[in-house]
Image (cartoon, rainbow, N blue to C red; front, side, top):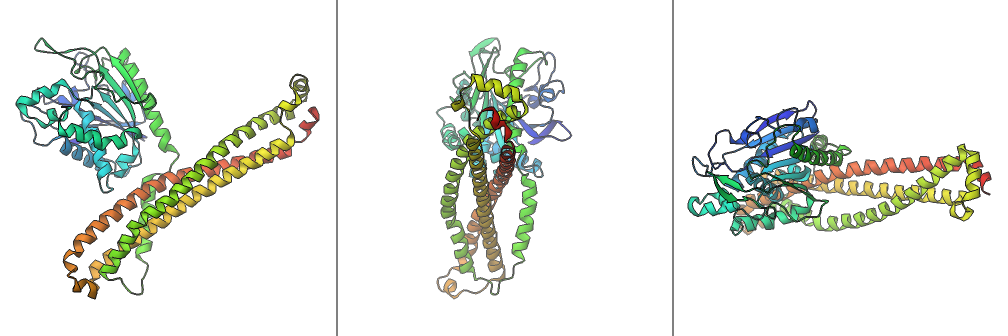
Length: 488
């Protein structure tokens, strides 16, 4: 059970992770054969003239696991395989955890991908990078609402088969746990429409189109219906295969969206180095008197409890940010439009004279109106920049308090400063357990803050650039005065 690299650009910008489905025939080469056409032997994820040609700056990885159903099957169920996937990805992406991810999954593979993301959401922060930087999932015949394969579970009791049984407790549980994440990702649902034959006997459409889709709006979930059965829905003969072209075009668009989302942000790896330096600086702080264990625990509880108040403060700033951004967009559009008119008129006096004849004066802005709009545009961009700077400062302060609370807990439990109140109530017996729980909460909070900081730094940079552009535009408008002769 590991991640196998199929292809990689020298400097990849995105990770594409393939997850195969069930292996009912216990085929030893099932992991490769899932994506390989039987006649041409084309492996569309690995061969350079296939998907690597459509998305060249990618790293293609395949998660291989024991998916046998009847013979030599593993006792590891979907949940355990999802844990294996998370751990393998975490180790593989240790130095590149800000790279976007797209999962490509066949059948049960889509269930494992969803289970992995649900587990990442429930983890204590270690997998937050995978959760945050996953952009989308391409599902090939994934039974989101169950499959006829589940009927085999009556005789085999295989956990994989039970996971695709719509009435199973696992299926219901996963739906509830994944629903909060549903709108966070982009989906490509590739559906089969042909019946599957086993030993020349038709068994029907293994995963019908209703089950293979999520019922999302088009902006979130694209559906493709191929004239293929469950086995061939994810195999393509070559680059000229019309079905491959359709799938590749959608994956290419998805990959571009994923890269664009992260291209202008600071790399998390760089921030982690910065945070390590910050932690070292915080740790070097000398406190006059070390805290006793109870005081350190109370301090940690205060930090965890303050998350609510700082969250409310952040929400207020976010509301102000939206207002400033909306106003700035309107003003920016007006100012830019006016600037284009100014540019045209300042360089083409004759054109300005002709426009004066055909366009009524009231429909054109006056010089004063242009300058006022430019001023308002600059102020809106300045406000947006200031709000985002405050958001970063708030997150920095939260990170500082969290790091300091962790340090105090570590010192208190290492030095074992006596606490009469603790001793009186027999508290030391439970100290380590309480400290462990608090440290887990604090560490999770630190990772979440790190990811949020990574996003905010990028937004702050964008706001600063917008502010500088507005100031330049205003300066240009102020300097162009003689165009006025054409109209006033």
